[in-house]
Amino acid sequence: MKISEVVEALRAEFPALSVSKLRYLETEGLISPHRIGNGYRRYSQADVARLRFALTAQRDEYLPLGVIRERLEDMDASASAPDPAPVARVVASRGRAVEGADMSLEDLRALTGASEADVNELISAGLIAADARGRFAPQALRITRLALEAARLGLPLRNLRSVRTSAERTADSIDQATRPARRRSATAAEDSATRLAGLIGELHGELLHLAVRALS
Image 1 (tube, rainbow, N blue to C red):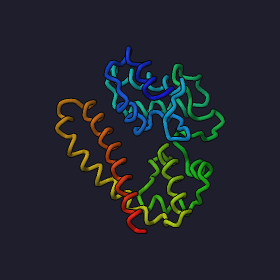
Image 2 (spheres, one colour):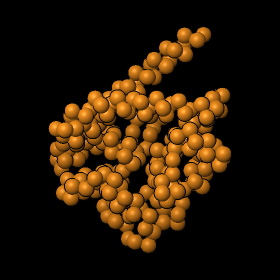
Image 3 (cartoon, rainbow, N blue to C red):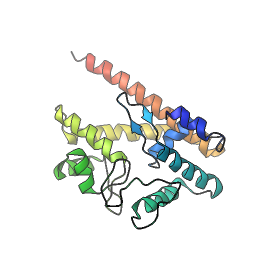
């Protein structure tokens, strides 16, 4: 399903759901839709089931997203328990890593081809980090792949620290811009922050391409 189709399918149950809210839940690690060649998201029925579970817990139990994510992770990691319908697993019961789930260092290396030195370099640069259990969030997978591709094209991994610093500065600016909205509505502030992040990301890309063309 396309992202707009997912919103339409769930809107009767969750009238406040929006495309930006859906993207925000993805950045929080609750879902990990498949990306097709042009980068567009495609959602499976399992993704929709996980969304329904998360949105219901948020609406009916007033749970923060961190707690909801932990519940999903516990369900995913419990190989002996029956499938927690309607929530589909994202980790195979035999322990095989799949994309869209938290992963160990070994899983991350297996899925990206990174060496242990590569991973340590990315951790040192602040691009990825393991949690208290030594596991990496799903976003670490794409970050690692992008970083390795940049390194293959001649940009050392250690030089990517500036990218992380730039992202953090931009996030601070977005936080300041959406702070007034947060006092009125946390959901509205999340939507605004997500839209701003997307716009600034596109703007940064355009300016970067202009700057690179100016080098020639």
